[in-house]
Image (cartoon, one colour):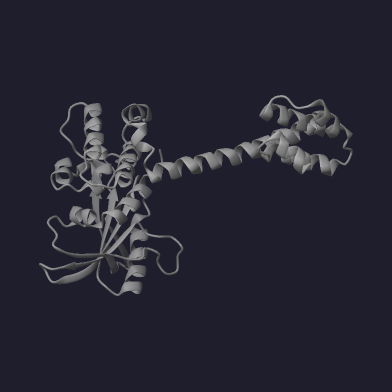
Length: 303
């Protein structure tokens, strides 16, 4: 399970209020999702909302970046984001980085950028740093911030046994009081994804229920991408192996090898037809077709 940051990008769009509450506990006001694609770059930032705080009568933008691991360049990135966000929306910005896992224990995580010339500070830029492992689990659970439940495996908890706590995390997600089962399944899958930063994949697999995962759109998308990648890599590997075999043993044998490996028995007539083809470029076309075709009948039809 990979792509830890993207799961939170997805869920923060679904539950923006929960992420505001994580930064500003007890917030009272309006929240508007903003376009996350900035000028002068094709990269989208992770979370961007416009906030109207009714209590304090203020309006500003909350920007959050999710980091699965420490990035020494984060201060420069956050400054770059700040200037682009301000250029686009012309509002004050509250920048936050949420680190998900302490991959460098004891290492100071920077929360500012200072530019100095000739011992004079020209620019001081600060942003808030939240460390998931320092956030109390009850802060999320008691306030029912289920859009943040996927980070529960990474936060501070009082369970002695990690396995018991992880089981509790999955149970909490299963019991979320929302009617959208697909969205609940997305939260469930995201919880397992982020748990992969802290727990073994074997443990996570033993605890997750396949029947719930199958309802998740994110899970299905990951499966489809994995299958497509595997298919493409299989085609590439087949081509490379076939060409190598062709150079060593003859291209005809390579075509027959690929077809027989993929579709078991092939007819003597088809074998004879391949051997009677003398045009080398045509034979290489047959080899490519043998790797890509979905059936023997399709291969014969397109020869």
